Image 1 (cartoon, rainbow, N blue to C red):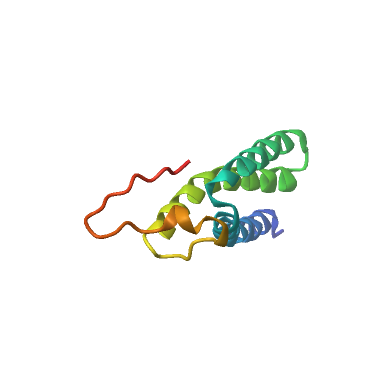
Image 2: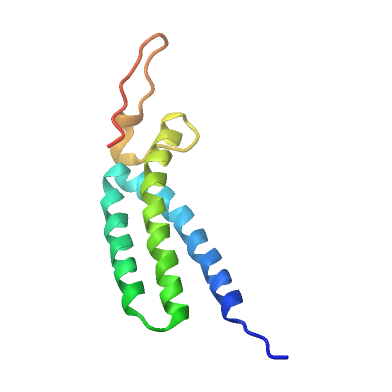
Length: 113
């Protein structure tokens, strides 16, 4: 019986890639706000193109996981902004005014772009 470790290796690397993107999302939103979303769009597009061009199944799979983790991060950047606005995470030093909570009884329009 021959064991194939390729699937296991892809699974472990997928877990690590997703684990890398979690703190990356938080840090990017903290320091750059939501204006960094397009970086992840470019990374995702580059990952898709690279995944299509690489012939080795292991690397092609990991590039695909990287690409779609980048695309997922775009939504998470905006979700992180909402979490900061709710007070669940600290606001970044460069955009504290954006996150200042309104006074009681006062409504505030939030621009999530």
